[in-house]
Amino acid sequence: MATTADFRNSMVIEFKDDLWAVVEFQHVKPGKGVAFVRTRIKNLKTGRVIEQTFRSGEKIDPVRMEEKPMQYLYPEADHFVFMDTQTYEQIHIPKEMIGDRVKYLKEGEVCTIRFREETGEPIVFELPNFITLAIVKTEPGVKGDTAAGGGKPATLETGAVVSVPFFLEIGDKIRVDTRTNTYLERAK
Image: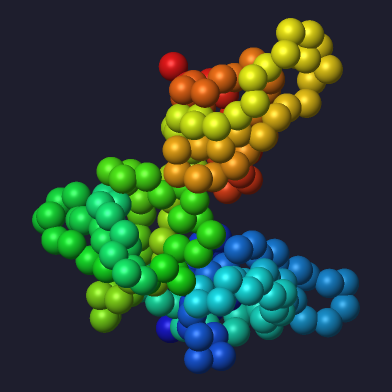
């Protein structure tokens, strides 16, 4: 058992018979009354984020997690197959766990999967924050467009669509922030 003093960002807790990840937390000590912890927690099954207040010192049930780098191999029916980069063991991750982040999943990409220590069940799927992908479809840039700033939509090799500067062409490789779905820079 732990208490609210042990809260950390991305910590997984069991709350209301479900698994929740702490997105952010803040210890509050009002002038009058008892201290409390204001949190935003994310349901790991549904992805729903809620605000929850805990009394300071309240007991919580943390879930022990094991984090492993896993390489994406291929899709199979309603699962995706990943390989442990250390043991070469293959596991199947359901499409629901990956959700709309599948648009950044490229063969051979190494992702992080967190498993529940007691059961070995995969709980959390995380993409790398930055991925390098090639542009496969975009409108050609017109001379003079660069002065206006802005951008144009570009379809990447995985099917994701991001807004890129006008000077980029088909075949260029770019770095994309997978958390915000935004173009960062041209890859070298």
